[in-house]
Length: 444
Ligand SMILES: [Fe+2]
Image 1 (cartoon, rainbow, N blue to C red):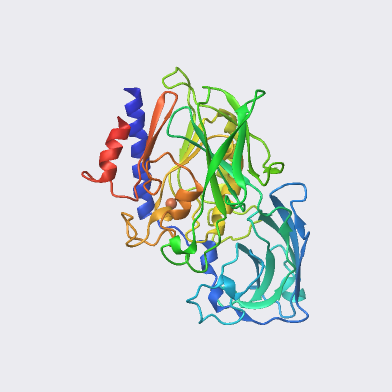
Image 2: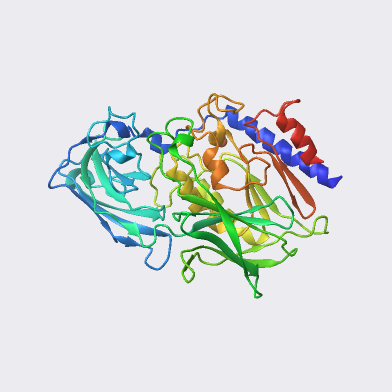
């Protein structure tokens, strides 16, 4: 009885939030304000951008502050610094249909940006400024470019040296999810290691006891998997490889430790740092479950970049609170509108980095929202443009959910006294549909 009530309650919450998402008007993705295709070259020999340090993550960390110093001979309040990754601007990042793009043929949005006068009130008169920008390991090198002309008519004035993480391919941002059985935990992570050459593995076990190795499967997706712009155009960025391993036959209520890695050869394995999680209670076992359910969190940058009318700034406060409450949280359900990447794929890495302390410790269960899925004629129930051309592909690849078909985001998951049933508001749920029929079985 209790089980079905909870199941219905969770389903109702998901449905109501989905409906709210449809009527809410969300502001645009900050990066969408940049007319990157219109960039023209105005390189000035006396203008410069310098970034330091050039080698990031030398102590194995996957985020670091970079000092960016710059000088412009014609400063203006709408000058801005864009962070590009990969660092090289060249035609290889332009899809074949963009012959209209002028030199310097800039076809990819920056991964983040900030105005040159941010924390430099005298920039407008001196032309001298500096920024501290927070970078995360995103499998490639970075460069910093100074633009005049504001976001709408970008004029490239100067480009910095390159900076790079010590191991750009390193396994990063593990995220746990409940599996299809109560005694199964899944761990998903991102790397630059191709599974054809390096074998993805998880080493895990009950804390203090023997550990074992489990293999991981690998997924990725290409520009052509995107349904439209900007995901297919200026927002495209290679997602790297997404690995998922299934840790099975867990003992109930036990503390496990794990690390994810890549076997490069018989003797060399690149490992992540070590993480911990607690397994589920035996189904129906008298136990207390503490679960956090929310939607629409989004992401924000700790260095204040990418700000656009305070878009999603509060997501950092929510993330901090979730981290503070981790020792009294069994699982998190982020039921749609995950990071509002809206077709700017670099933002998915930044989101998984932001939630890493949470998702690496407790199951981080997601559902699909309009900002993950909606795109005309792509199978979504609503025909809006809210996913920015992603049409669900990044969400279903970056995060594991125990659905029969991960492109269809309805599933159930047992945890202790509960069966959580998650509906997919972005696919048809009406009587007679596949979701209606299979969800009725899931609720049980
Ligand atoms: Fe939303």
